[in-house]
Length: 499
Ligand code: ZN
Image 1 (cartoon, rainbow, N blue to C red):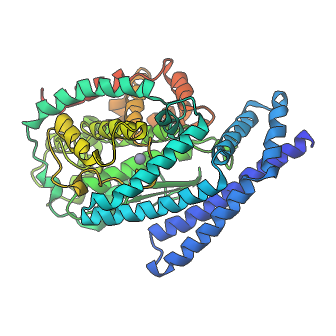
Image 2 (cartoon, rainbow, N blue to C red; image 1 turned 60 degrees about the vertical axis):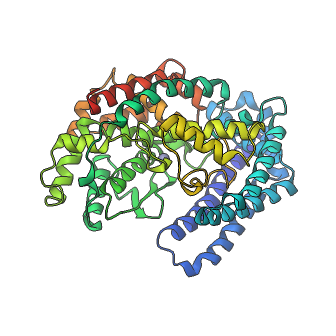
């Protein structure tokens, strides 16, 4: 093999994989947005075939030989080519360490287990889901063993979602959060904030206008970013010039679409910012799930819920669009309302202060489930006890308790911590950014361009060039440190609640 031929093959392989991915994503997006229900089976069939083809394209002798040859030529590759080979080899290894028959059995189980979860949640019947959860856990323990039998299984699973992450980092991280957040939650609990004016009636057309205005403020233009509506909001990046975000309009909850658009918009800006030279390669991706979430939460909470942005941008837009509905509401009232923090049962509806406690509960429980120190029979009780200890409330049933999230049913064990990490990374980035930019002054004027340019320069443009720990070190000049996040939340809650 010649080096040039091999490099051409590498490029072609990545282009073809991107094409299959884009076709699958298009079908998925279509089904989630405007595709009629009648076409679901046909879309599913087409997606299945595309997934099989892309698997065969990637997991084969040709790819194996190509990557092995390029690794041998390591000295002649430039850093970007070397990284492409590294990331693809990593992916291939991940797929190949699982025997083919187990891979297929697991795919079937994931499908059955998700269906069982849907039904169990609807009927508030944890017992019917429990056997599936046991099997999912068993598979995940075994897969972790294939990856690295010398490492605790849960650490192997964490590493799948956040490269390099382990309980050695997460245990002290969550301990620090707990020490700060639990007392803060207790303090704010008896200081109610009135946010009822955000839950009267807000017609959808004007909510859509508000969403469009927020996208414009964020520099998301319809030429490169389209907004659709789905049951649950998400972001899908085809390439940096074509990113889709979705939201859901609730007539009786103005903040939902407003803040979900800003959140998904943050994800979209990351996709937009990845360098041209990385497009259609394994580098055209975020550094990690946690890093992606750091960008969405940065815009949603750190910018979007800041006093400056709420008073300077959200308030004028919202009161102009809904003058009657928001009559008598002051900028201060709106600021406090969108930052209201209260213990609640449902993770996806939790506020900025309590959100990470929901994650911490899941982290503790899944760690014990994987280690085998907690049985699935005792899981609902353990769940309820932790809600009582951390948030002071107890779910009245499993539907609002242990059955609320679909992650575990689909085999995503070790994923939850990335949400909390994302929030904490964002606060650390804010600390560094603030030494160069007057973030509040810019946010107050709705001038987000310098803020996005900063994030693009330091984070977005690199795509997956670096793993999370290295990227954070480069951006911040120090390793990940949760102190910035607890400081940020303490400052914020002190201000919102006048503590
Ligand atoms: Zn997100």
